[in-house]
Amino acid sequence: MFDTTGFRSHFPYFQHPDRVIYLDNAATTLKPQSLIDATVKFYQSAGSVHRSQYDEEQTALYEQARSQVRQLINAESDKAIIWTSGTTQAINTVANGLIPYIQSDDEIIISEADHHANFVTWSMIAQKCGAKLRILPIQDNWLINENALLVALNKRTKVVALNFVSNVTGTEQPVEHLIRLIRKHSSALVSVDAAQAISHVKIDLRKLDADFLSFSAHKIYGPNGLGVLSGKLTALELLQPLIYGGKMVDRVSKQQISFAELPYRLEAGTPNIAGVIGFNAVLSWLNQWDFEQAEHHAVQLAEQTKVRLKNYEFCQLFNSPKPSSVISFVFKNIAGSDLATLLAEQNIALRTGVHCAQPYLSRLGQHSTLRLSFAPYNTQQEVDAFFTALDKSLALLEE
Ligand code: PMP
Image (tube, rainbow, N blue to C red; front, side, top):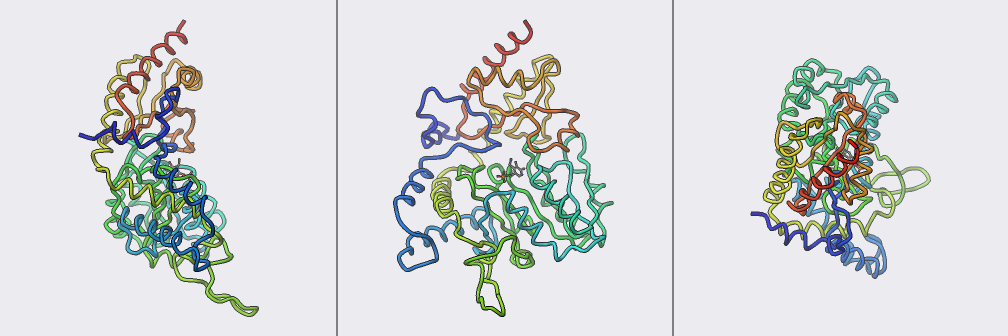
């Protein structure tokens, strides 16, 4: 059994009794004390990293974070862990970095399952390169249509950019299996958006066989403004840097500029040191908890919430085929924004809108959905409080 109370006690958010009931964890998670302590400690010290003798201690923590991320996702080397500002910047680093490699009439494949970070970025790169964009449909169970993928793959396919876990329905794509198919039928590079997967799936990058993998620290108890681009060293080496400047170079003269090795080649400028050192503390703390038990707890809460929601006559659920901690739903007779406003007035924090995934919402046939997303610190009492607030809101709206 997962020790929810113990886990929860590490989050200062819950020390304030007047706090809203936070059920929007797919947007961002709450922050543990370990992150706050490490961040404060960093800002109480002086200096940078990789610059001088006096910043050795900080540099060691900074590089330890890279090792911890490597272990978290089983990447092949610390050199294959590149700090970015988030998933969005990581995907943009891949997409822009491949511009010299993508010719006009090459092809790029994305899908309806994508967040705009993937959908828009690859659409713009296809446009810039004059490449053909193929958008795979998702089926009624929200899984990418495999036949459509097989039909789309050919020798001109340069990139397939896949969503791993959806932020709209929590649906997990069988990414490992899809990559195996892609390898069989093309020589395309595969980029995986793992923004949601990072906190729900035990990722094994080497087994997954993806060329690129992107995620954000803030979705797994870490700080804002920090993300990771990882992948195979051979693939990362193909990338032309997205930004240029200090620390990403080897030699600079008036005649010639040569770049540093990975990971530094893709990390120009002073990095988000506080973020990285804070994330290092978060990962050390997270290692003390059983990942599967924690996930199981969040999924169980979501699954029983789904069962209870099904009892409401006008409620339509958009469930993932596998149990998941994310629930998208609408009330057919009520505008989502009205319901969300009334719930917010009763201290329930959930999301309403298009979830940065308009093609997905079109596929669901909806202008917006309400979304609940659970984390391991959520409790049964919070689920009950949600239903009390929901009943009260519905009664008010039906008056
Ligand atoms: N992809 C998915 C599936 C996401 O859920 C998100 C965040 N909502 C992103 C990409 C973008 O992440 P970020 O805003 O942290 O760059």
